[in-house]
Image (cartoon, rainbow, N blue to C red; front, side):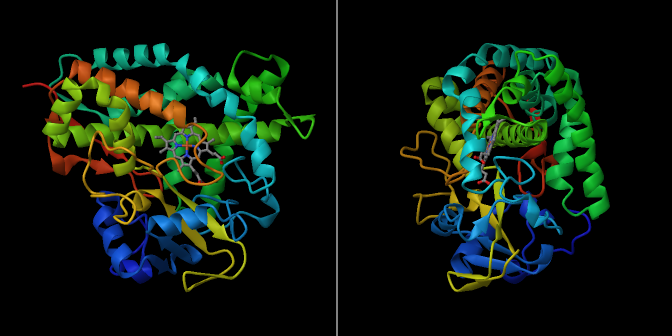
Length: 400
Ligand code: HEM
């Protein structure tokens, strides 16, 4: 990302916003795992990067030494007073508060609730594909993948569909604006909350059949959830649901575009879709989350200091040969496949059923219309930098 010097030594000076990491992090992860499995950097005020599955898992499961007070690495640490709720409960919350904040979300994302959203999601994918008809080259990231999660989450929350560009702008700011000066960071977050607050206030006055109203009617500690908690959770759902799924759908199409054997197999054996989705999630896990070290603490011989960041690279864990056989190979019927793409420990993704449904429907509809496609220009593909990685420019040859 603009502003940070280029990395020359990944073991002592890594930077997950570096262009090389965005373009292809896997060889870097492999080298680190072999030579320095918990890398360190002075950037961002001190940060660590474990690359072995066992270390990522140990830290994700250790809420005694690591806090989720902030899960996006930047130069700034949010104030201690925000703990244990954090800025966006439950993802930024620590135990015991976390369990209550998470519990209330689970019914909304249960398999039964998500099944009901499948027909409208499918209809929307078909609509997007119909709009691309007649083109020989389409951008599968910008013209397809980017739109699906935005529409789905906007409908769930009861927010206007036509504000999609605005939502993508908020996401970009929160996840990729990490190098901005503090004042600009604050303005970006303010804009997000200024957009959402009138929507929350409107539901307080006029409850509707949507997720915002559901949250306002929920209770925490026997008391109605206050609108300040609701706005922060809604902000989380907007951020957590968009970039992640967009990235996962885009990376899957990217893989199939450059792997004709896998594409043919998926087209001829559609029953492979469920295991294929898991394998694509494993191989191209889009999300890396962070923790802050609570107090000085030695981990695997590394002298971690209070307020150091630790990047939980679920993508690196998913490529660890000690945990997965042939981790760099995409095997569409890999089973078992205990991947960490949705995280490990108490913060494991609450939206995983929704994400899987969106991925499955998006890929099913895509291959129905385009059973044969390839990368138009591999060099033109652009990946997002930072903690959520996926293709943002993805030109695909779909015609002759
Ligand atoms: C392929 C798409 C997705 C991926 C790869 C993904 C990945 C993740 C990961 C790795 C975590 C753990 C965070 C941590 O340990 O700090 C997480 C948490 C979470 N995700 Fe997802 N996510 C996806 C889609 C979604 C969607 C669509 C939603 C809902 C709209 C969602 C909502 C959440 C929530 C609420 C949490 C916090 C759970 C908690 O703290 O208890 N995610 N996700």
